[in-house]
Length: 236
Image (tube, rainbow, N blue to C red):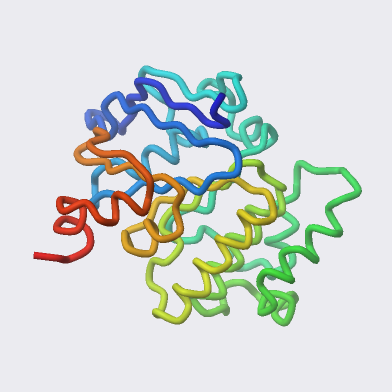
């Protein structure tokens, strides 16, 4: 049984239907990526999983239980955290206060060790712990957004465009960290415009076009697919 299973999922905004009946599975321990052009429905898919957009029809199941009608905080409590596109940090709070908010629903004894885990993954955040988050660089803000999500100790981490606006060196660092997070036991569903990097890191991948899944397979296999290479890897 998949850790996350979407069946016939339809969702959108107002009169716009952004996703039109998609099926996606993510197995425990996997990195699965969802690639597609702008407006294809990638971010809407993540938002429907995390409860920020309510499905119009279809189901979202996590660890065998339906979650598509749960409030957002209950979905987080169930074990799903999202790193939103654009980072979504609290600019007026410190780095440490942002991380605290990531753990706001937790009362277990492991919170302190998870601060250390985040600081080990992102040493720059330890150096900036008392700094106001809005004064961080773009790369540091992305690290903070990922670290805050990890403070909920998720079983499934939803990453929405983690490389957006970053320099090539920082993109490499972020993807190296994604691999580390998976090695530490998290399952990851990744939405990413940098299709080459996404397919390199992913166990499996789905291609979404105009709200529909058009291709799926192993990441390495899709990276060799001629239509994918033409559409998303810039090859003629």
